[in-house]
Image (tube, rainbow, N blue to C red):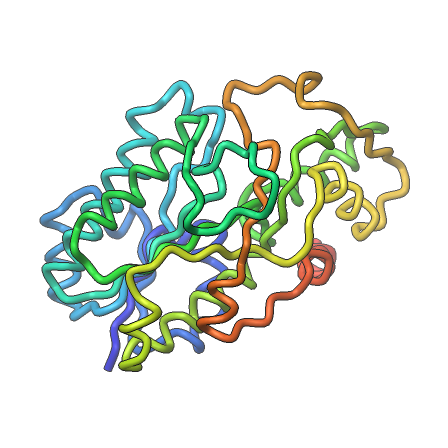
Length: 294
């Protein structure tokens, strides 16, 4: 019987994985910093051995992009060192590590959707630490799958969708950049994709073509942050606020963000037979859920 460890279980993706627990294999162990410090190698190794863990899904990350510019050591500990420790532990215990990374490993200057094989060139501390985490996993010798995602949102925690809804209720005008383009990702859809990926763990063909790869996953379609915000406000039924498009230089931030970070999802769709919905479909589901729980 499989035994699966989910780290960072109180975050958006971790909570979305809790929602689909029945799709994940074997006994599930949902942990966050209060239950397990993944930067503590001895504690992590003991936990994995004691609970006979054979799948580790790492949802833990330092995601405060601007704050990371002021806290590079903390960002590196969580985004770079912790994945390396998880990878070493996975290798020593024969476990599969599924790790979540980001579109910020690219500089956003590309002319087309990014493939997994495209050159990485992060421009922020956040992106650099996430890329270092990827490399630590690749160099560890463990069995791994790395999934890069983008613009994650859900009913849980703090995210762009919930922030826009709050601001639209507080203000007459909400300014949002229109010169940064990508694709939103509903955490519930990413959770489903992870469940599908790990369901093949014991398939011999999976070891040949599925493991030790980087994949890209987001919802389908392309939009700017402005387009995303406009759809959020309309779906939420907020009539009192106007969403105003502005350029990035009108909205300065500490961290540089990719101007274009659309991800090519052909590889994960082809290998696992995934059908991924357009970003507007899960957005409606998410906002309906938020409205029902007000």
